[in-house]
Amino acid sequence: MSRDAIYTSEIHNNGFTFDDKVASVFADMINRSVPGYGQTLQMVELLAHQYAQQGSNLYDLGCSLGAATMALSRGASGKACSVIGVDNSSAMVERCQQLLKDEPVEIRCQDILETEIENGSVVVLNFVLQFVDSNERLNLLSRICRGLRPGGVLILSEKITFDDTDESLRQIALHEAFKRAQGYSDMEISRKRSALENVLVPETLNTHHARLQQAGFSLSHTWFQCFNFASMIAVK
Ligand code: GEK
Image (cartoon, protein in one colour):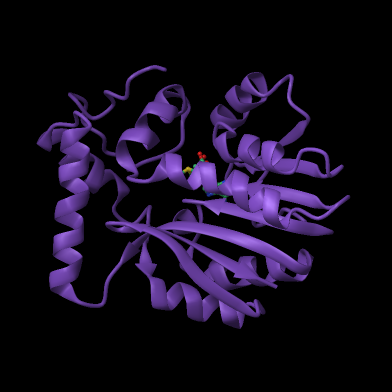
């Protein structure tokens, strides 16, 4: 796995994009930046095992290098499901298709706002909705809900914010301590924070749950949280 050193020395004026440089170190970057990332993947497999319905479609929207796509595929094995990973970064998709070339999954280069969701039983948005324009989020979740079979689920993992300023500051400090413990320097942490400004737009758990309800899901709850990262499950 190539080590992420993108923010060690360079000046980044263009914000953050999922280009070839990011794709080439992405596995290392996400593992060392998102506390609990490995746990979310393990549980995507378990949740797919629990909720994948025979002969249905499973979607990993914003699949990057396909880690959650593989978790879906393993979790649903034996149920004749079609597993579809979608990402609009060609750098990610090319690597993903290469990495998963022997796996029974389809990887598409497409904007998830354009992906038709049909006959679904499990849809995953693993740290992706946070990059979607705020005005498009409800529409996307509504389309996902409509494309699910009854009893189907959405697994939604996100970086989150907090209404309480003190809690927010504490959780951000803990996340930064996590990144330092993973070997990132204060300079790298601060450059990455600036690059993600207005690119990754996090929201509170309350906002997410209210929107999931508005989108048509019958219930949702938070099954995981580590500092300012959380994962929810919403059931149609
Ligand atoms: C994982 N889920 O390893 N359409 C398609 N792809 C998009 C869009 C969009 N509109 N917006 C962002 N992406 C993965 C990790 S990373 C999370 C997901 C992170 C894609 C983008 O190209 C990138 O590959 C991914 O969403 C976000 O479980 O970097 O923090």
